[in-house]
Length: 116
Image (cartoon, rainbow, N blue to C red; front, side, top):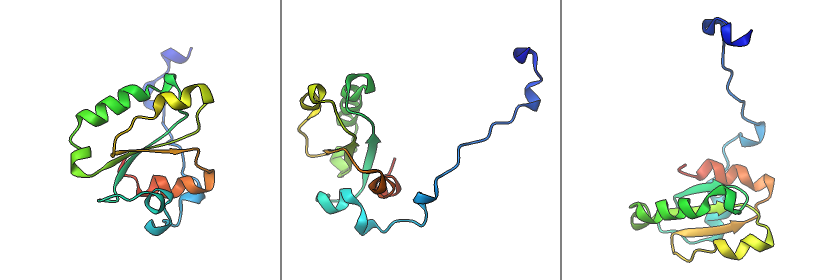
């Protein structure tokens, strides 16, 4: 029985990182920095499908209540959306950037330069 096993014998092995994330990608190649002017060029990133189950409303509310927009940070959403949901998540705020679908080969640059 698994639940009766000695927990000291259990070892957690973290997931590895794909080679595509190395070497570090130059900031100039970041799709976010190239396509959007940003005072600080620092951003927080959410990569997800744009749909209700991802709770984007709550993320945006929390972002706008934080002090980060006033400090010049951006919140970037990268991900495709079903047509029925796409227009519902176009919050208009200078600190929120909607990138839409981002190709896999461009994601490492976005991840590497994001604050979180």
